[in-house]
Figure 1 (cartoon, one colour):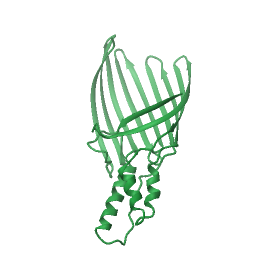
Figure 2 (cartoon, rainbow, N blue to C red):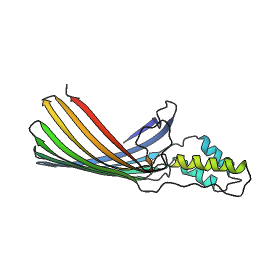
Figure 3 (cartoon, rainbow, N blue to C red):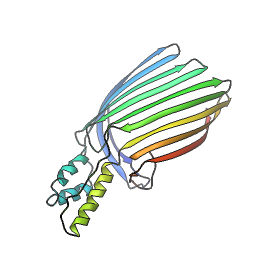
Figure 4 (cartoon, rainbow, N blue to C red):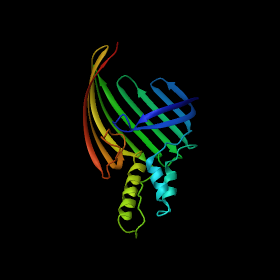
Amino acid sequence: YGKSDHEYPITTSADDNYRLIFEGGGTSINWELNEWKLRYSYANVKVKNNNASLLIDALISASPLWPDASVIAERFHTKGKQFNYHQLGMIYDNNSWWLQSEITHLNSEAPVIYSTRHFYVSVGRSIYAFSLYATRGYVHAEQNPVQISAPAGYPPPISQQLNALAAVTEQTLNNARSSQDSFGVGVRWDFTSKMALKFQADKFNIDKYGDTLWIKSSTNLTPKKQTANVISLSLDVLF
């Protein structure tokens, strides 16, 4: 059990932070038998604050012309909302073959933070000092991307202002949405007892409004499907 008051970065800019005050608790259980290991974890978190936002103020101000705007503004409220997190993991390792898998589920009461499912499975084979492996994974939001439309029928410049507000609102509500799947292969070389070199290649298929996990120059998500190829080379050292 614990409490936290922390600002989380949402872009590469030092000024873009999202403050969360929350309290929560959790528990976990582990089971081991020979080559098998299983773990289950559960956590519950309750948020104690709302974040001030110029966008929320703008939506409330526009509500005389756009009655649904005040209802949309409530989607950004996080105070009193709870999050439940479940995690189930498994490892099998007989020193020649190994299999590792994990599935998690985040259930969110706050519309601005999406409920998500995560899963990965990795299988590998050890041959002397080398380990060959392949990994398959995905993360998917349970809700579809939000679509926001401003009311029609107003003359310019009011119509342009309402449409711009609707576009910014749609983008912001989708900013916490993660949705992608990936496949990767790699090889690890333990050339000494305390040093290892690892090479890995991954391909990612990213859904529309699903690139939250990727570092970008702004908070804007990409409103189209994308693919990405990542090649990494790392050196692990044990002191």
